[in-house]
Length: 297
Image (cartoon, rainbow, N blue to C red; front, side, top):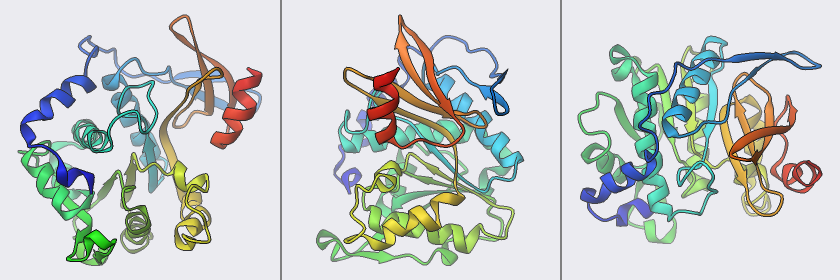
């Protein structure tokens, strides 16, 4: 996996400073603004100005979702800049950016007395070691892995980890970071984790920057990835997307944005301000936003 070929940890502060550039101002306390639509009361959140504000919004949305008994949640946003798209940054750097943001998010969301009951899953065992030596140094959060490299890793074979063996009775919150590099293995393990350790319990599971849109959009053909395609019917419908940003570039550029419990909104940037041009209760497909909603806005 890309992380395993990274340079040493000494370069990491450069990534950290890039992620936090322009975010030194003090932010006001997060508030939900309430407005009316034709269908229901809705909660509108302004598009974040930096990553500090984004994480505070995501934290507030997560807390409300947990309060409303949502057990399976998704958080998705770009890590190479709030106006970036997946692939704008080198893959390994994007993953390390997600790792740093996971730590910051957990520091906001998880109170000190609950850190030892929070288990953060990373895609591979080797990444856990990398995280402990860098971003999660000194943290009481439990770090764990979804898959373990095997002798045949170069041929695409991974050692399967039985999730029931990884979970402890005191665990209350699971956060899974970027399970998309070996998606056919990692996402299936995430589903297993949900079934074995979350269903019929009081636990919660958050998928953080899993690039699930690739699966939703059929990027992985069902003929070759039948189990992965089945997740769109068996697993994804149970999921609440509590925070989401997806940018569209080009002539009809814009943003698909959602902060729970608000509606899905399509935004366009005009004079350094984001204007809502469309909103709906259910998530629209990226194809619909790109080919229908934005061109007609």
